[in-house]
Amino acid sequence: MNRICMHGYVSGRVQGVYFRQSTAQEADRLNLDGWVRNLPDGRVEVLFEGAEAAVEGLAEWLKNGPENADVKSLELSPQPVQGIAGFIVRR
Image 1 (spheres, rainbow, N blue to C red):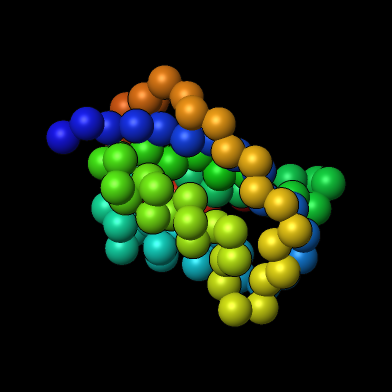
Image 2: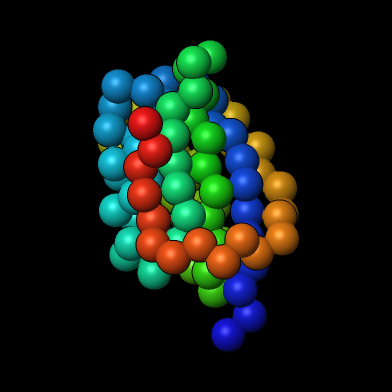
């Protein structure tokens, strides 16, 4: 399996709408590893890695996020694979 890694920022109405928890659920569903956290400026930061198709799937999901989110922008950039095991919500 060819693993790839992406790091990025999601902005808009993405805090207080279960964005982190929903991202973790979607990442688990796609068998991805990484983390997600809120930032003080109102954005959400995310890093995820796994099979290329799964990474692309989460990247697509992040464009809209969960039902109550209003994503205004998504900035993603490829990163070296980190070797992370599991997906966590950082506080």
